[in-house]
Amino acid sequence: MSDAASTPTDFIRDIVAADVASGKHPVPKTRFPPEPNGYLHIGHSKSICLNFGIAKEFGGTCNLRMDDTNPAKEDVEYVESIIADVKWLISGWADHCLGFKAPGATPGAQRVEGKPDFFLGSVAPGEEGRPFHASDYFVQIYAYAVELVRRGKAYVDDLTPEETDRYRQEGRPSPYRDRPIAESLDLLERMRGGEFPDGTRTLRAKIDMTSPNMWLRDPVLYRIRHAEHHNTGGQWCIYPMYDFAHVLSDYLEGITHSICTLEFEVHRPLYDWILESLDLPRALPHQYEFARLNLNYTVMSKRKLLQLVNEGKVSGWDDPRMPTISGLRRRGVTPEALRAFAYNVGITKYDGVTDVAVLEHAIRTDLNKRAERRLAVLRPLKVVITNLPAEHREDLEAVNNPEDETAGTRKLAFGRELFIERDDFAEVPPPKFFRLKPGGEVRLKYAYIVKCEEVIKDASGQVVELRCTADLESKTGGANSNRKVKGTIHWVHAGSSVDAEVRLYDRLFTEEDPEAKGDFKACLNPHSLETVQAKLEGSLAGVKEGRWQFERLGYFAVDRESAPDRLVLNRTISLKDTWAKEAKK
Ligand code: ATP
Ligand code: MG
Image (tube, rainbow, N blue to C red; front, side, top):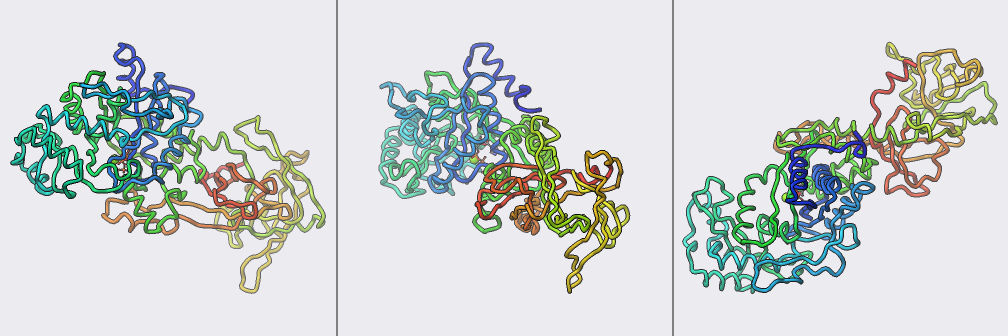
């Protein structure tokens, strides 16, 4: 199950393996091409794990490329976050496969005159540098556009965007379709020169206006957009469309297997048409499609996630309730867990919805192995052990991780004043309540059996303190510890405890398919965040980072807002119903 233990197989890896074996592509090269118009989400992690996984397994590289052809929606903040998220997700696993542009590599520097082909500067995997950008190739992509016009395979069209859409729907050729090549070349040059306002002209591929595949009905290759671009600034006022820029970026980088999600299957004939029409000298990339990841109880499109951020429904892109990679990281999820999840989901050709429980299972399995156990009380209720003197203090022995012997044990302070969980006491207990009740007994984990002798309330009737006696013969691990009671609960020693703000998260949406009813924001879960003031065992004093299992409560991690004088923790995920298990012990 862990990504280190076995190598996945699927139809795409079978294709790559065959291409490696036949010598067609001895060194496969993939790419991960996000558009920097938002933060990466868990769906992207599936694609990252696939593309980097293939590079790793077959000794290749995977380029990180910003698919940044749309100047309006893109932003440097997104570029930075994407780099950080990808590096985090592949850390300790496929770092050496990361294809970055080497410092000083100038795309197009080795242009071969007279050939519509360009070579990239050398790319050293893993070397410091920056990611590739589709916008780095604007010069070459434009040259390819000119080449297509020269070959009679593209033309400048004067139809408006609305007319173009309508004509394409109707399968009707534009009246400009057969304008002379020289005229198109001249107009294209002038489009680039900034002579025409937005929306007045486009460059269109000349393919087949009657094709049943809409993407082949003379798709637009370039549009006029007088806008600043985050990478190229004011250099350009025409921008290539996704399909045109994408395939040529793949080609320029020497990508062998261009892997994308199923909705691009219908674009594949256009992908191939562009490559074939340019008569390119080097090996051509090929596109393969797989089913995207869909998860229930969440939305995944960047546009919708952006709405949640902009409308203050969450605290930001990395709000721990967000399905973003940065949100999951902040919540305490490890890259190993996300990779195991991607592995478990697998790669298929069939769209489906993955139950969020599959993700939660991967997170629990991972944290169960790595997280040391600690005691903490989320909603404290004071307990006084009346048969111990005020100065009583002893160090008990607690196991750090039953799943990992090497994690050892630690000392746990115990004394007269403790905190237990409010929920673990019931004045009027329901049937089968095995925790503490008036006159009842319970075991304090790693410690003694205590009996509730007296319940103290404040003026409003709220229980504020329990006075208990401990059976001092019943110490866990002691000679007389075999006396059994039905319940075991966790606790924290008051005198040495540490205060912390703990943020408890629940699913962000109450509906399995938030988009089904139109307005996805209408089914936001009003209880998705609860903040409590907790008491933690003394060993956690001063922690700056880390992940622990708080026994019976779940897995917790230090939040990035935590400070030395104000510890803040996130609950990464709750445990399964451990109460039922504990009660049987
Ligand atoms: P969104 O619709 O969320 O904006 P997108 O597909 O537009 O996503 P891109 O930045 O274009 O996002 O995606 C980068 C890569 O990640 C693409 O190759 C895309 O196929 C892949 N990808 C995006 N979403 C998913 C998903 N849910 N499952 C698997 N792969 C995905
Ligand atoms: Mg996209």
